[in-house]
Amino acid sequence: MKLLLTSGGITNPSIHNALVGMLGKPIVESSALCIPTAQWGHPMCGPASARRFITDQTPATMCGLGWKSVGVLELTALPSIGRDRWMPWVQETDVLLVDGGDATYLGHWMRESGLAELLPSLSETVWVGLSAGSMVMTPRIGVDFVNWPSAADDRTLGVVDFSIFPHLDHPDLPWNTVTSATRWAAGMTVPCYAIDDQTAIKVVDGNIEVISEGQWSRLTP
View 1 (cartoon, rainbow, N blue to C red):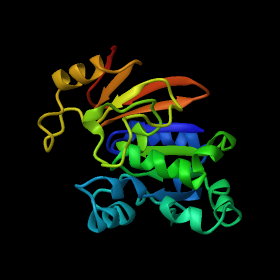
View 2: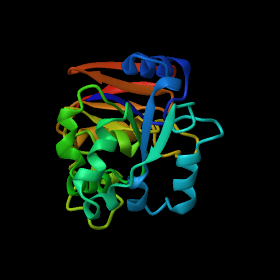
View 3: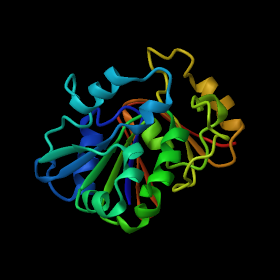
């Protein structure tokens, strides 16, 4: 897949332009499926925050960007309806918009639903992650970011070979400092990126590019 791994969504013109370039066509001509599943694994999320992600209005950073169409793909429902029904929905869409929450919970349901197995075949599909929706593609997220009580450990899917510390210097998360990120990175086993909500990591054919109008740091264990 083509990956656009963000901390806060499509928050500035640079990230927006990167997304359009990855799509190869305007957003208004592109179809999207949004995935709110990670929210159910995080104690700070719930029905109201899931609705905010789907309606996405003030300002629009994901679902409300002006897509040709937007649908909801709830991964916890997929095992009960059969792959013959849901796989065409995924295969025919241009972009998957994946919300934050708990990355271990999201990874669990990506595997249980069969979506993780399908990803390698989606060579032209763009995955746009927000926070945990980005972190799920990494090998590990660090125990500090695990909020789902049933998680066996901090491992996620390992699609990319780096880890992500999101929401750097966020005003509502005063503990998310460079110092905290450096301490977190010391416990990881791969290179790490600490990124703020004005930053994204673009990954296409194994090539990594940081897109930013904000602050970010590359950290090593």
